[in-house]
Image (cartoon, rainbow, N blue to C red; front, side):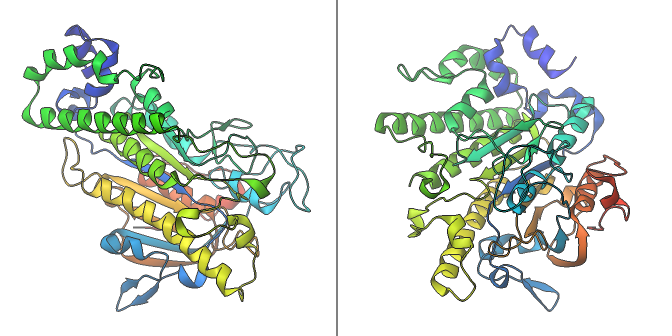
Length: 438
């Protein structure tokens, strides 16, 4: 009898299932299989990086981080930096479009009527993205199937749909929109959207079920359940405060990128989304997730950093504009700081029903659509892997490759999770096989 049937036989409502089905003591299938969980998270930030403050040095066999990667210092031994990985996809669309929508798909864009810069117009990507490929693979196996398969989180992603805003694809011409509103994500995770007028608690609907089942749980499961309920309660309280103050959702930007705004509460929204992501994975609602910060060509004005210029415009400034470069470094330091917070949350959470921390069983991939903003290069994409011990990826290294297609990296990640793909995306870029990361 699997965990879901067990809970239903106790007479519990459907509303209680999200709180209970992820408890390891109730997951008979996972225990019987004896296979450790493997998770995968992609974190995206836009508009390239500042290479001389990003790529680390290697001293005495150890990574020496520059300014941008400094927030990851506590996990240096679990960080792998990849240099020389390139997006070699060509064809229709400008570099930002191909950088964004070909990033996880590894294949060309369809012809279309969306035009950027001086390049040809284009449409959506021609294939599935690697996150969705891995979702489908894990969902096909009984021992790794989860409620959602994958979750797509956004932070300040504008309410528009084009190749500059979408990196996840369920298949050809099937872009997936990230969810940027934490209230909407909370409603998705727990099967209901709270009425903004009454602001009743999700926990009100499950209180009796929890009281009924709690005496039957192991001490470990009761502890995990208490942590789960506490986090949901805290998130609800924070969202309720935001609702009362009227400043939860960042404003929807106009189409004109020169007037795109990002609210000063974006850092707080980012932390809420990260908490929701970790909570969903801790409760085995998903093992694949994406966290997309803003968009390609985005003109976010990050006032909380003292940066009032649009991000994309800053990224076009020449290298000798020291003021612009300093602002871009601050922006990328902030993105890395959010990655570090995600890492810390995973590292501080014991693996449910297993050994070590959640970070030991999770691989985070931080990536960008460009190598450098003012050149629009798709070479030397800034790529950082964090975690991955359970994926047999050895950290504490900076690996140098010679202009290898990024398709080969996605093959490596698929193989590390047991999916023996022969190629991914455009096949000709996979002829040399997967990259060696072990």
